[in-house]
Length: 85
Image (tube, rainbow, N blue to C red; front, side, top):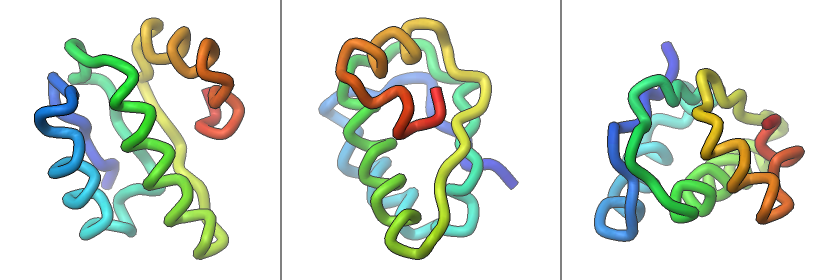
């Protein structure tokens, strides 16, 4: 079952979301961004933290239904390839 990102990810909820994800490691292999609408570059921090955790276990995340803005941000920050975007 994919890990569904909330509609909004900002500095206000990023740390809590990151913790929730780390408590659900098996679901982090697939991240569903279909609900994600309101976000900033903070979302990249969360995704990269999850990716690092999974990488340490020999796995990786797959980001599904990524909005165009997320793809652009990942490209600007040079992390698109790390996140499979």
